[in-house]
Every structure is written in C-alpha cells, then in structure tokens.
Image 1 (tube, rainbow, N blue to C red):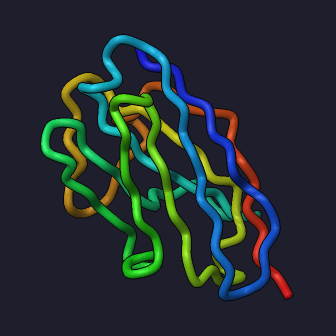
Image 2 (image 1 turned 180 degrees about the vertical axis):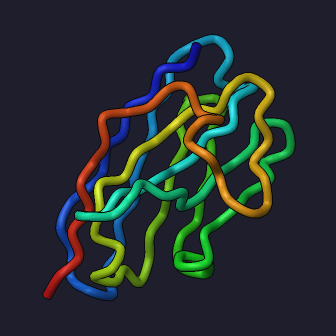
Length: 128
C-alpha cells in the first residue's frame, strides 16, 4: 500500500500562489492514482484534483479549473498541486490520497471510498 504525506501549505494573500507536495512511499506508487481533497471549516471534504498513473489523465473540480495544476514525478514518488490566483474560498485543509490499486480518475468527481491511503493534511489560508 502507498503511504502519502503532504507539505507546502501556508498563508497567502488573494491572488497569490502555493505549491503543495505529496510524497509517497510504497512499491505501487507508479500504479496509483493520486488525488487532492480539501475540507473547509464547516464543510464536507471534497475532491479538488486527481491524476491517474497509466496515462497521466487529470481531473479538476470546476472551482479550481484554470487556476490549479496537478502533476506527478514518478522518479521522485511525488505529486504536486500548483495553486495560482488563490481566493479566500480556497482556504481549507488539503489532503493527499492514493487510490485503490487500478483506480483511474473519473471525469465527474472523486469519491473518498476509492482512496485507501490518506495524509494528515496541510492548511492553506488565503486572506488579506
């Protein structure tokens, strides 16, 4: 099973940028889809972005399309989430998650039940 851990959160002003990193360990990383979820105060955790392993297929929530970019470096066992033009509504705890073996990011949304390894989360705060 893949183990994951996030880093790179912090506080920025609206319009700023942050890059989150997800470091993974485990022999099946190359075969694992990796997703980012976030949970804002008082809200349910929701999918933000996902990248498949086989062909690099990506998915983004509508709220972050055009601003966030997900990428992976299999040589380093890392996945990144580049977040540009951040807005106050992006404030949340961001979680990295590894998909169950063989999972392929779908085109509608990502369900938590399809991910079996989660990081502890990293806080992202956007305010002026």
